[in-house]
Image (cartoon, rainbow, N blue to C red; front, side):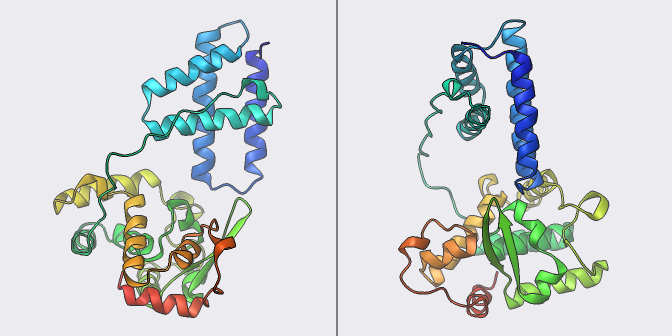
Length: 281
């Protein structure tokens, strides 16, 4: 019971071709491509000319678990299993690595720290200032920055779509004003606001991560709070402190897992915008 390296390479390419047609964000697609390339390189080195067995895949899991952090290792093995299922080779799927529970809840950025971060960003890196305001004011992920367009700012919301899921990214009145000012100052008249190279894709993730740590370090903010996930967590914490409505928070975050348990109907975008404006983010 083996898979040849050639069959694995061919299956990987077919899987990546299929993923490109599914509307994944470029950053998510790149994660798949990078992890599958790593997996193929591992088996080319370890298996050589012979085929790959389920035992080899189990060894790969042990190798990944020893080399990478828990979350990264889980992601690599999960993608590997999805590839084998796509190839109809379920017998090569393996039990994923167990998720380790953190010793303590993550530290949340305080409002005071958030203001310090904004102040230093406004002084040192104006583009990052507006990106911080956008993520902390909407709770979006990095990949959702592609939905923050000039048109969305004018409308007060963005219609987001990812992997068959749609939701509204609400842009509060104060954030509308902030982003309109940014567009005017930079001559951005349509399309993505935080564009990268070629004006047709969002700004590089590595740049944001690097600058968050550099600027946050200037004002003595703990590095664990200087990530895009931390800004999203800050948004959630501020919202729950004000509204204590977990169902609406999940709507705002694009998480539909609670929808079946929701009793009251959703509020309008205008009402949600008014709530977010009160947060002052």
